[in-house]
Amino acid sequence: MLAVATAGFPALGLAQSPADLPPPPFAASSGDGSSWMDGAVCYEIFVRSFADSDGDGVGDFRGLIDRLDHVNDGDPATTSDLGATCVWLMPIMESASYHGYDVTDYYAVEADYGTAADYLAFVDAAHARGIRVILDLVLNHTSSQHPWFLKAMADPASPYRDWYIFEDEDPGYAGPWGAQAWHPSPAAAEYYYGVFWEGMPDLDYRNPAVTEEARRISQFWLGEMGADGFRLDAIKHLIEDGRAQENTPETIDWLRDYRTWLDAEAPEAEMIGEIFGGSTFLLATYYPDGLHRFFHFEIGSQILTTANYGTSTALFSTLDGALAGLPDQRWAIFLSNHDQQRSMTTLGGDVDAAKLAASLLLTLPGTPFIYYGEEIGMTGAKPDERLRTPMQWDGGPGAGFTTGIPWEPLQDDAATVHVAAQTDEPASLLNHYRAMVNLRVASPALGTGSFLALDTGISSSIAFLRQTADQTVLVIANAGTEASDAFSLTTEAGITAGGGAPAPLGPAGAPALTNDGATLAVPSLPAKSLFVYTLG
Ligand SMILES: [Ca+2]
Ligand SMILES: [Ca+2]
Ligand SMILES: [Ca+2]
Ligand SMILES: [Ca+2]
Image 1: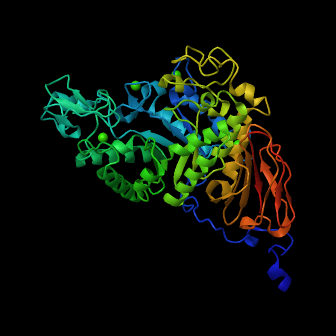
Image 2 (image 1 turned 135 degrees about the vertical axis):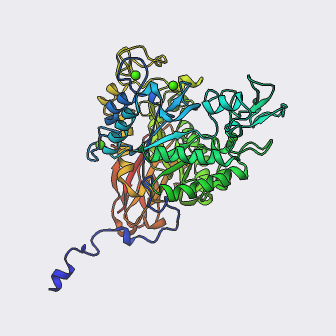
Image 3 (image 1 turned 180 degrees about the vertical axis):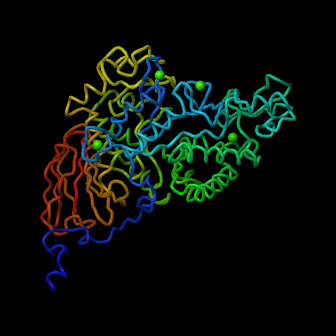
């Protein structure tokens, strides 16, 4: 009977287990595990440029559904897909512009992309594959073509008049980056406020009716339209106080109220805010309860600097600051997004550097976001349209994006840089992304674990631990342009306890590490490489 009572417990003392490790000296870990975004990897999609199903040259929901297996085929056992668990769709509400950041109807899908039924079929297809859907929500401003603004401008007695900000005289001051913020009305001798440009008049969130409408819009998309959350655009500009036009206390209070309302209304919804260029110091003013997460712009650009130049000092110092200054690793990181030069352009076409950047993105704390096309090393520099060119699926005339004429010309390298070619090449950037995203999603420690940097004694050699109660992962990397010198890690954080050798988790080619019980010996690593091991 005693034997039966102990059956099912592991034998003691035979192998190192996480329980043998000392408690981590590093506390911060991602969220409390209650959110679906804890441990998620997200993929940012511009629907107009992803896949066109009907040959009109414009991407659409049906095309997106056809290509969803690229993002995640719904089977965690296969790694022939990226395996991302969340997508962020750039604006899909009806808009007058190609990009969608000036909405004309918050309750309709962009007609260029299909019908509401097409959109809902996409949401169902995504959910069936285990992909959560977050939508870009543009609250700060509408299009100048939005009926609310047209009515407000045409009729001072309109109920929508107080939804916007009008002045009889030009207040005369510029916006926060020096651009014109007050625009002459085409309808009357007066001025209206629009921080981005005249085509995007700011809504007035001091008016409770506007806040009520923002909540109604949120309910609509989270309820009937099946969204799992929002990426909130330009929120540092929500409420101005005269010349103070960003990060005002009123804006931060508004976000807190919105979050409180949302937590009661849709407790599973995730809100991630764009505070463009925000440092840890600035972001800290929005936590802990402003929104669930914010993008940390600096970390991604420092990952690119590390991959480009081999210097990781600034990256790890920023990371230390974020871990100390922001709660629970509740930030998100990306190498580039729709507003920035594509990372392969920044990296000068260096595929090994792009692989290292991807590896760091997918092993460091913070929810990783991958902008579509980054996984094949698409290139692109400003103007904005050239950062948002059609996805390159194959070497055909329309790149597999369309059978017609693409809405925006393809990049010059479209015939050679594409998904089909890189699928066939085991060592391609795409297959590297597939391995690393799948590794991240499958590893609790990489997804949500605490973080501890280890001293390697070599400036371009990187080592750190990620740890949860169930898993400890060791990451080693060489950011230099030459093979690195061997180095040793000592008993720090218990990594040599038990004397077992770390087991490689990926990517392919990880060298064997040896553990003599006192030191862990790391051999020379290839230039610009990163490997992940499990310690238990
Ligand atoms: Ca189309
Ligand atoms: Ca899969
Ligand atoms: Ca439209
Ligand atoms: Ca505003």
